[in-house]
Length: 423
Length: 159
Image (cartoon, rainbow over all chains, first blue to last red):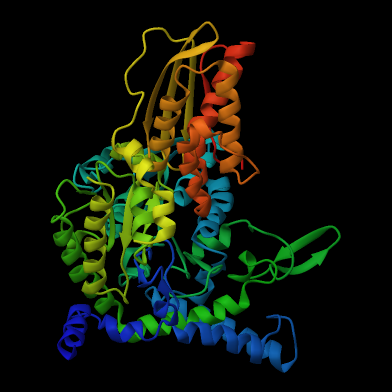
């Protein structure tokens, strides 16, 4: 028995993170699902929350709760300070940007929509081009499809190579003097592919195009430095990186944000309102109309701290090792088709796969009966599914609390699934 | 595995999933209807030959999860040779059963009762429904001939 426990511990540790130790910080992982220990492998959809984040939410509501920025009483001042502390922390977390360049939204989706509705509306015209990639999530696709329609602009896309990378030699042909924006994901939510942000940004800037990066899958899993990468806009979400739902971040270069029209309008985003006109507030408040998700933002600070304590380099190292282990073990199931790059260094821990004879939804239902949570479907990337020639895939996605034992449970359950269906 | 799961994937369902009936193409197509659930990717192609008011032959080609494949296969097996009225009646009973309404499967179709195991898995109900709703629409179109060509139906976002 003692030996078993020791083995489990060893199995959950990588050189990056001791996931057994991390697990103790996530109360939800104590849940028993259908008689089995919860094995949570749906992190690309949303991550679980450590006690520190849950406590921060409770503490905010039991101790601090008030509206921010306008009140003159103690609670309002404390709430404002806590909210702005998270902004300062976020600015540091993504490479040391100015606080005025960090805008809180309700998610990465809203962050991208904000750019499409403001910068896009004023900078993309008829005959202009927007360059995206074939691996975009609908969040970084639909806003550009609709903007292109509205403006009679042309939407172009960077194709994929057969091994799941962007076809980079094509990029120089696809970026033209009409390209206004290059919008791409930092890390694919289906293939796991990590894209070369700096290289693509340099190419875009040489042609005078702006760059927007969807970092929803990247910021939770790798060190990100938007200053070093030189991007113009960068969007991500709190809930995929241990923080609360309903909080997103848009980083934008100050020079661009200053020139942009407001997005939502109303309270907080104004400096002076008359019946015949309005002057807008300074950055970043110009883009934060109305009462934001104050509690969520305040608790997001605890998520950032938690990740910093682990160290983003260590998080990445952990996922490289665990992804390598998972990719390796998945080959033990004959005929199983795994999508995306085979090299763990070129990808994150998002692993999509299909079984030629079992539909992803059946796989997901069977795995759930063993307490294993994965995702099945088109993962909000229908055009990519079409490129891949799939209607749906099953997807296991890893995070800091996952260890080799979770991968072992997955493999065992996948084999059991085949036995169950008699295949 | 657990009981709830075995209740959905009953042996009869798994049998139809492993060897679906009605795969063989039919010579004369009088009724043609397609079903699609884009969010799952389930697709069904349903065709039937009519002869003196009977569904003389049924062809079902379903690509999707075990539930949708089994459901389509059961349709092909149990409705073959039935009258149009009977097919409509049974399809309606199955539809009601899957939607959790009061409905009783007639004795000679008792195997179809196995489909109701999906009711414990709300997101899978649409998978079991697809073949039946596709048939209902196809029959309706055959009878009033209002739609030119194929009808395409879905059981998504309609519950």
